[in-house]
Length: 358
Image (cartoon, rainbow, N blue to C red):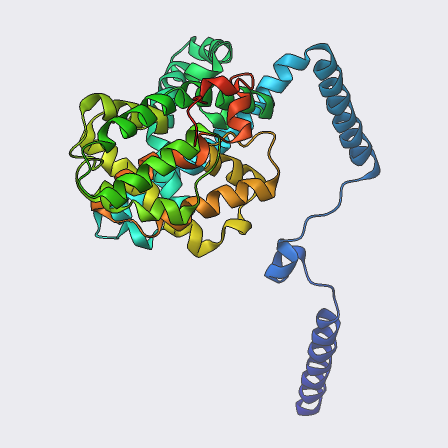
């Protein structure tokens, strides 16, 4: 009995060993496999892949046919989509900049791009936000096509085509440059109140050069800087009519205090542009910088635009808050007789040329 029992136990041990070996060689169940196998997706079958390719091809063909049938609608759609993305990006950057300023950050720490966003986005809000709010109202989606009927009034430059931007900027500059002649007249009128004879002669030399379509150098402009620090050309000392022409020429607020704040913001933008390098600006950024500073950039070579900004920033970097009025007069001194600006008035030289001898 004992021997038979021992034999049975040996047989049981052998069966268990063989069974364990056999089970260890079986393939593992998918549910019990590692996590690495679970995050893999099987490629689609031949039939499914064929159907997906057919659907994508059908959508592309339908889009092409609709674009050919309704090119204007598709152009508006693409322009609005791109413009909305750009507008949202600028709005987010504006929020970051303004919160940083509220927390004690200085304007001198901001980049050129951040300063331009700080200056431009509030103006864009006034145009775009009413249209976007109306578009969110049920049935208000018609506001977007209507806005494209009058894009200059109801949309910012983000939503314009290149042709629209060029047309609208030229139209705006034409109205802004009409204030150059009254500013020059005010400069000549107040020059008789200058007590320093040398400074009086310098400012008269500049005004006569401008009248004869000769650009004064930046050294000549810096030579009359003391006249803009106090009487008669300081921003706090000139008349309301004079302030109004300066503000409209630069597309800035008419109120004296806000005009000074905007001029200082432009001054800090000039300093940031110098730090980052004028030559590093893209073509669009270069055109926008010239447009904001009273120069029609269309029709000019890139080098001509860079030279204009170099002369502008050479003067701007020397200025302080008490002499910021000189910055507002730079469109008269540097932009008055620019050929691209004259073209906005049909090349009429007599519009800014007196027949007085120089």
